[in-house]
Image (cartoon, rainbow, N blue to C red; front, side):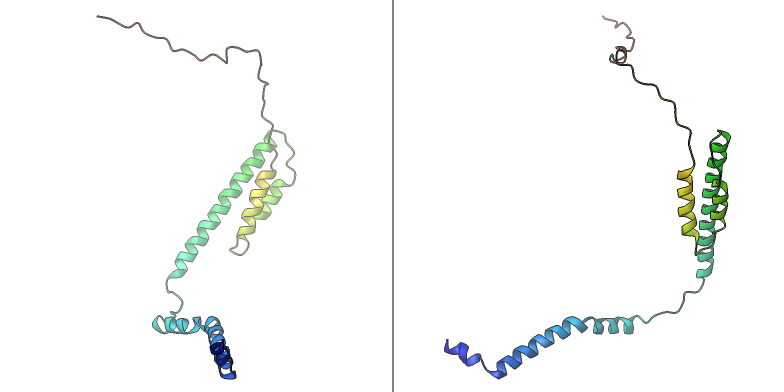
Length: 151
């Protein structure tokens, strides 16, 4: 007990406070020296040369993809119109979406065309109810067997 009382001095409290402050400062600012060393060893390079053709190719690919989606949606609309379904305003909306073919608005055009594709009415498919008394569906078909020759 006396040893513990001997340690309780202002100098011990000051050392403990300094240790806690050092730990907190290392936690808060510890990443900066590593970042400075990384920047010194690997300095930033300017803009890459020759990336314009890659960006133009990617932009062209996305534009062609948008036009293919537009053609598919337009075909769905014309097929629904040929079946006599009400598609008023859908083709105009698709035309408005394809006019958004700029890199800034292309994602919105994709989303709108996909939603428009879901909004195209479809003719309901014909179904017939299953017959409960049909026993022929319960039996498995047996393949015809050839006679086995014996010696």
